Structures are given as C-alpha cells and as structure tokens.
Length: 263
Image 1 (cartoon, rainbow, N blue to C red):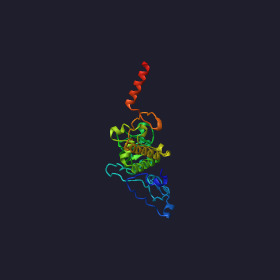
Image 2 (image 1 turned 90 degrees about the vertical axis):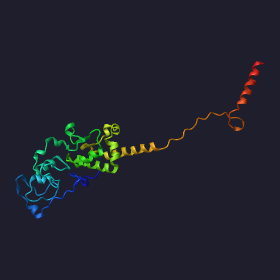
Image 3 (image 1 turned 30 degrees about the horizontal axis):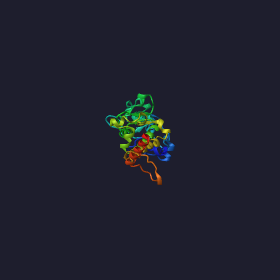
Image 4 (image 1 turned 180 degrees about the vertical axis):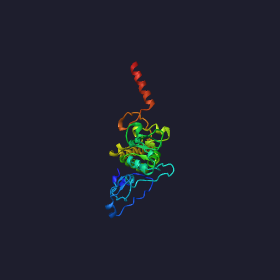
C-alpha cells in the first residue's frame, strides 16, 4: 500500500494538475485576524499552509482542491472529493443545491457503480454486472466522485494495480463487458472500491489472482505427455531372458498333455 503522505497530494483529482494555493507572507499570516462574511479566518489552513487575509471559510475548507466549475451550469467538472470538500466546492461555485445529504455516504457520477446509499454500506462502491472493471475505475477517478479519504486512497491504489496488470487482464479477473467472461467471475471477486479495503492487503491478493490466471494459461499451452501402451506381463525363462513362448510350442505341449490323459 503506498504511503499516505505519498498519496495525499493525489486525493482530489488524479486527472488534473492543480495549482498550489497562494501562500501569504509570514508577517501577513501572523497578523491575519479579520473576520470574513463566512466566518472566522484562521491564520493557517488545515493542510498547514498560510492563507491569504480575507479568505472565506469555504475557500479555506476547499484549500487547493479543484475549483474548475462550468460557468453556466455550475456543474463541477470532476475529480474525487471527500464529502466536506465537495460541499465546500458547491458553495464556492455558487451552486449549493448540487450538494445532497445522501452524498455523505459516498456518491459517484460514474454509471457503472452501485451507489453506497442504495446498499446501506457507506463508502462502498460495487461494480455492476456486465461492466468493464478498468473503464469503471477510470470513470470513478475522473468523477465527480465523493468518498472519505480512505475510499479515495483505495481507488488510487487500484488504479496503480490496473495500470501494472493491464486493462484486458484486469477486466478478465474483476469485471467484463463480455457476458461469458463476466458470468464466471465470483461475486466476491467483482471489483469494489471501499473504505473497508484500506486496512487489508488487497493489492497482494489481486496480484495473486493474476499469477494464478497466468499459470493456468501456461499449463493449458503445455503439450500433453505421450500415451504409454500397456505392456503384457512376460514370463521369465531360463537364462534370464523374458519372452512369450511361440504359438507352435504351446500347441505341442497341449497335444502331449492330451495324449497322456488318454493313456
């Protein structure tokens, strides 16, 4: 599992480069005590960086999260967010109605996933039957998708596994658009993105499945051993040589035996 510090910078939007937030001069940060219309402005943001004087509470909560918003529709462009980040983003975009309280349990605009609020399992997304696992994962990360930070980290690690394994094998093992393949995938093996996976070595388990699949293909390609004909047990004779008696010898012996019986 990649280190948390290593992945933290990728939490919000794996598909976009996000500019770092502007940092106030130390003397300005120390003196920042003004109150904005949205609430008290702290000297330091949650991520440890100093914030500009006059920033609203929503802007501070949003931090360096993606803020690209469609100017006309107010639709957030995409990315992965925690519920708090997404709600703040809606406020920043001027579209607070985009937030739904059900999103606190998790939500994605990627159509291939069963939503957490449909299963009553918070922060757990299960791939629907007949869907490509690789494409569904890419669409989840493209978002907009909402989940706690553990769910987001799991999604990023799954994407690293997908990238290393390749889309074709990933689909064969975890979800495919081909019904004959998809029907053979056990329900427990179908792709999931869940905060519960954060504490288990799911990456190693998935790699083991891939290795077993490769081994089965190698065995199927190996040529079969030639069939060995069954040998008739041979009778040892004098001199240590094994051979079957000639047919005429057998006939002679039977004839002699018959004559002896008639006498």
